[in-house]
Amino acid sequence: MVDLTGKIAVVTGGARDIGRAVSLRLAEQGAKVCLNYYDNPDDAEETVRKIKALGKSVIAVQGDMTKSEDIEKLINSAIAEFGKKIDILVNVAGGLVGRKTIGEMDEKFWDLLMTLNLKTVFLVTKAVVPYMVDGGSIINFASQAARDGGGPGAAAYATAKGGVLTYTKSLAKELGPKGIRVNAVSPGMINTTFHNVFTKPEVRVNVAAGTPLRREGEANEVADLVAYLASNSASFITGACVEINGGTYFV
Image (cartoon, rainbow, N blue to C red; front, side, top):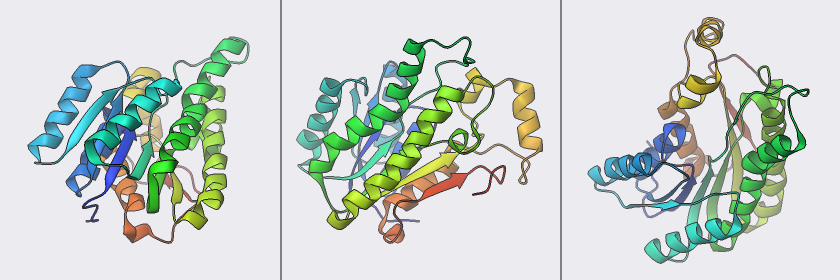
């Protein structure tokens, strides 16, 4: 158990799958949560319902994290609801969109993946940092794909997530003197909608069978790691990227 009592958290992509699990876990540990969602209000409403059922404080704000004006709306909503400080930022928003080889991929698709997975981290972090105080924590979402290049047709996604790794290290150096820690988590095969859509069932079975723990991970396990990194229990950890993949890849 970690204690996040009195902390204010912003979670992009915080309405479903890993994002929902993160929003729930931060709230369970005492944080007040402002979660962002993009295009599914039903998911957001369900996540809000679950958090309020715990007796915790939460708001959900719709927005496209590739657009500065939507990010400004998100941050303004958080500070209007909870006050002019943000202690925790979790950059979950991102996605694979589709699997395309270099022959199938055009410039527009490449730019989309870079914007969705890397530029969003820059834009949201830039908007949050002015409100972040000493002891603040930023957790970015990378991917095992950033380490091993990803599966077939995931080159653009893997490259963008590799950028998240590098940006995390750079920010850790830049923001450390202000008392702000910056880390990343790097999930492997986690049981989510992402893999329901983009990974063939037989591939998932094979990956799980080849994993030392012989299973896929669960979203709540990633959320536990995020909550730890957000807490004072991780007060001397910054610039790290923590692999959470059941042993399929070691750094």
